[in-house]
Length: 457
Image 1 (cartoon, rainbow, N blue to C red):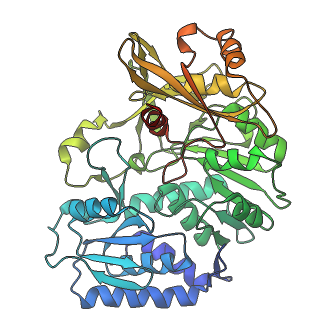
Image 2 (tube, rainbow, N blue to C red):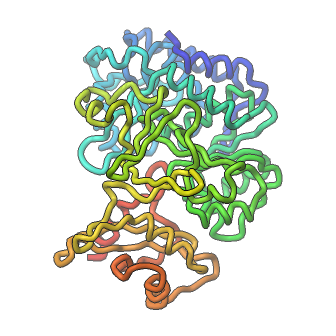
Image 3 (tube, rainbow, N blue to C red):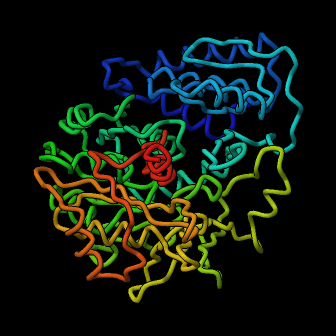
């Protein structure tokens, strides 16, 4: 059973007019990727892979990854994406949590365990198991259904209007649901796909020479804006998501390009892209996540938490029905994001419930301080986090990235910030860095700020 997403990908590759290209120079035609998929599917069936069996899939934004993914779906397997650079401990955890006995890397099949995994009813209609990074304990495996994700792609197709004339630059990793839906939407629309295995400034600048659409996270765009932005003569659409797009960065992007800016907020668990802030919402919508997309409902709980109800959400967490049940309230998924509705009717994020800093018993949302610091004329970006402190419980540490050619005196920065907010919200420690710390999906990593504090001693 190929499943709905497999059918979409297979039909797209059969209709492909141009090869899928990678920035490292690798190109593959649709015909070649279909042949690779057939080999992978045949190899899995020959080894006795069962229907709905989870299979680890190494991915690195290579054209061959598309053929391998399709091959898994054609064999009736459930793909468990794993980045090619993933640490051995990550590989061991995913293998243990899924019980996978097969690993696919490009066109190669490897047997990694003798015993088959247990049969799981939850995986019967599944396409993917997407593991979250998880700040503590084991990562959570969100099970993504074929039909639900396919239905979401139809919504995004109407919302974004990709066409066969487009060329889409994709530096987002295919192990990230944002990267997966951009890839699938590109191919199903007949557009040309340029995969970027490693999103360096040079690779992005090269791709922007021909692309008219790009998908990325704000951290990538900060890097592009840090120096003289590259030329993007054909850019028509700029997609962003994965983390908050600050108002200041949105304004800088608007000063760089007249392309449509589409800010998309969502979670793997809710089916991705639950909110959209687009061209019709400018400039009032800058700094918000906009309004809900089609068929998505939301509410802001008395605690301030944003909760989402969507027909496109996950089937559940792998092997954890108790956690699945605890993650919902009356059908609404508890995002953990704190939000408010502004006067214009847009939803604004004000922090993460788990990120809230308790400094001397006073609760502080670090995102608020991030945004304040980014308003300084010499600051390109900032990221704050709480760090344990014997006296106050927690204190605030901040990583600051300066605009190109600027210098900054920390004492003056403290004075500037003190004039704009309460004293207790001014960070105790500042780190001046060339870029914000980022995790595996290139999103800014707030936990890394705390790790800097540990290294500092």
